[in-house]
Image 1: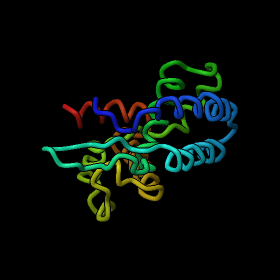
Image 2: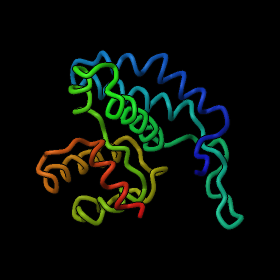
Image 3: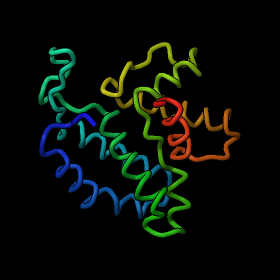
Image 4: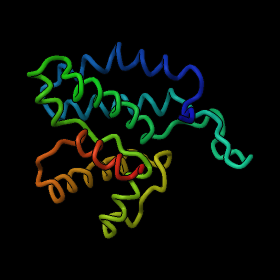
Length: 172
């Protein structure tokens, strides 16, 4: 897997998630509180996490030290929460049931492409990659994921389940 964030970012992300974000999420009592905590984390991330330099065919496509995008930070938190809450049922089984309903899908660039194909009229102005995803486009992506859950899956699955299904489809 290619490094997205510059060296030292793992420790920053780990410390922020473990020291501040996880406990607040575990103690959330509503979707609104969960969303505020998620947003606060992402806003912290775009101020404090930088991208690693990336090259393609010898050309620099991402300059070292460029700020991480909202979408990149959100995906990092969404994947972490999917594992910790959805797969591990933390902090406990009772809280898991509530929190799991609030989780977002950890959408990648390929999955964004599938959403664009499935909802062409709603994706006319659409980011090409996760590094282009800002806060408003992240919200639109999550709205379309929830719409897909209602239409394709009759509201019988959660965002982490949608993520698992569509990640496999998009990355085959």
